[in-house]
Amino acid sequence: LKERNQMMNLMAAQNNSLNESINELSKAIISKLNTAPPPQPAAPVVIKDKKPVVREEEPPVQAIPRVKLPLDVRNWRNAHVLAWLAFRMELPQYMESFGHASVDGLVLTRHVNADTLRRSLVVT
Image (cartoon, rainbow, N blue to C red):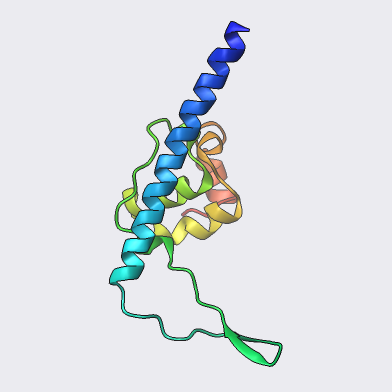
């Protein structure tokens, strides 16, 4: 029972940390959207009930200038890894391959090596 409670406390702390990171990312996105010029209507236009509906593109992760990452890399989600690539490492060109492979902190620390980078993630 004591171990279960400790595990629950650790999970709650991790959840709080991740929520803080997500909230900070959300605030950064909102701030960026509020300071950016109004978006131009973006393609494609979807016709629904004979009314045109314009889909707005999401701002790219690179548009967020500062990101607070959890201290323990093993707790990073894929979004944290992508933010780390874009902002800390300044390698946004690899975001697509890391995102497609769903690389999170645990995968990054335990399974990504030079061979994986070259062959699977196409990092040169």
